[in-house]
Length: 189
Length: 165
Image 1 (cartoon, one colour):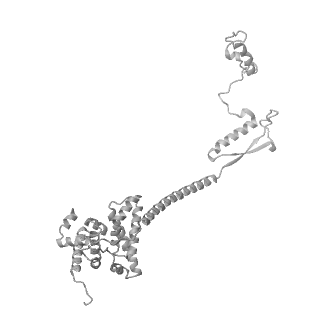
Image 2 (cartoon, chains in turn yellow, red):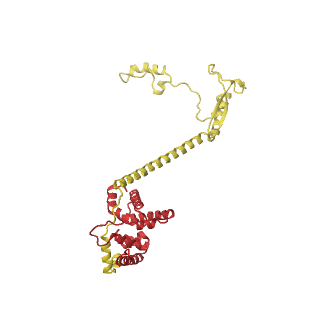
């Protein structure tokens, strides 16, 4: 609108000259349209390829970073401790004296590795184990769950019946006793 | 922007005018190269410009001025030679005006007036678009346009020089 208002101020001579000048057409160009289209397509292809190259480079960098992190974490120092454990004669079933000094040759060495965070618990466990091996079960801490030894419990006691007074309850009942004796090596658990 | 049909249509509509516009500063070969590069750049734009014609003219203008400056450093007379070289317009028997005389008259104009006249007459741009491309005020564009037309008319009305003069 502003353009029209301004251009309305042009004189008729100006307008006539404008029309005459517009009658001249620009010289034809020798630019090949096909070549132009080819160049435009090639440029777009290059840009797409560059985008993929960039993405690949980024992924490679991420992979290298992850590999460096994993290598670095695997090289961190690990706390190692050597615990000496007394050898127990399993075949004789005898445990060596609780307070007896064991010869150095009977000690087996084993490596117990642990992370720094669990070092204390491992030390406590090893110490308790050594005490048990030296002094027997008396070295274990007293537990409220321990019960006095009792007579073995029979199946009949568990069932609350006597074997002689039991009545057969099903056609399979006659077979129950042999199976039970086979499974439990007698009537004791 | 990857629509070849649009690019072809824009090329048909604006290529010749853009080359004429660039001829103010460059010879024909360089002008065509720059126009071609402008179309390729247009194709590479991720978002289509709002005013494609103005965008093309701005791109050609910047590239042509840069190229003219670089060429001026290499050959000081190249710019003047480009302007004086004929073939700006197609000569046809039905033309009201003589194409060579018009070219000389336009070439004589001060650079700013010449650019504004070419954008208005042959590129068909509005004063607002011309102001956008040339980064001038609309009032300046309008004043230069009128002065340019006056200068062309005076040049066209003056008698041609003859060999006897």
